[in-house]
Length: 397
Image (cartoon, rainbow, N blue to C red):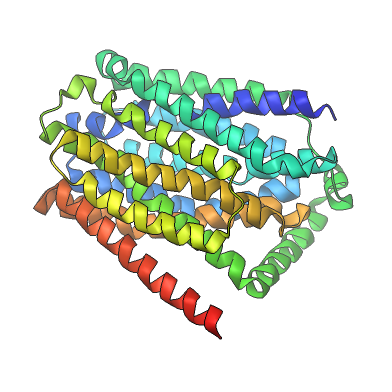
């Protein structure tokens, strides 16, 4: 395997996948189409219910049938999502678009990470994983920044053409991953092409049992994944509701993506710090929890500078956590189950978002978006204090 060529192709894939012009303005688009904040929250809830249900099965599919095929299917589902989001006349079309969007990201989530790690493992350079994955994360966040910069263009051309561009980007991801070589580290991975129907069913059941056994026998790994999910949860809600909050603070709707440029860049800074950080993971995550909780509360402030500072603090902590947790848990995962186990992280995130998204939408409609941010930050701070107390008590035993 030519690991350099493999990595470059995956870098291009990641850049295209993360270039989501619609992310900074999709709430604005739905509000302009007559949706309320509560309905937006429901749509987001549908997205995360879908993600929660299919996240782990999608990881299993990647482990059993191949990571390359799964990423190609992800692109096809993304195109379907973009098409449904352009349809008018029935709100269910938007909900279908959210379902396909969740399925698309389910297929990519965990699969890409597993493909990159096993590619490095096959080439004998898995020790480079933390730096390589930090580069992936930085590429994604910088690409996201550029997509935010184009949000005024997205509003100018309208939601239809914006989603058409998204469909084109998904097509490009399919082309990128088509040139990637499937890593084959274990005998099971080398035997994928020889599976027949009955063998697939038997392997699927065995895979579920082995994955369940790993999770039961490694509670510390589950705690790391849960902490990572908890730090990611408020970051997405910030990006989601900050759009409306900035408009309420007097920022022009047509330029809504411009002040949000700094947020993904702050996440890139967090990943850069994580790439060179070797300190204890538990302490680092607790510090991140405190900083992120304070930052989320600051987002509720009506001063633009303070709100953006808070958002950047939360995103930097999320970027740091992503790299440190990924590098730590991948050392424990087996290659035959890697995509499945990485998908557990995303599933836990979706479980949290299923509850948080509709609830925050209702609170935002009734009490204002700023109250939603204060509540989110307070909950994260409380959870961090509880987690810190449990960790200290176990250390003392």
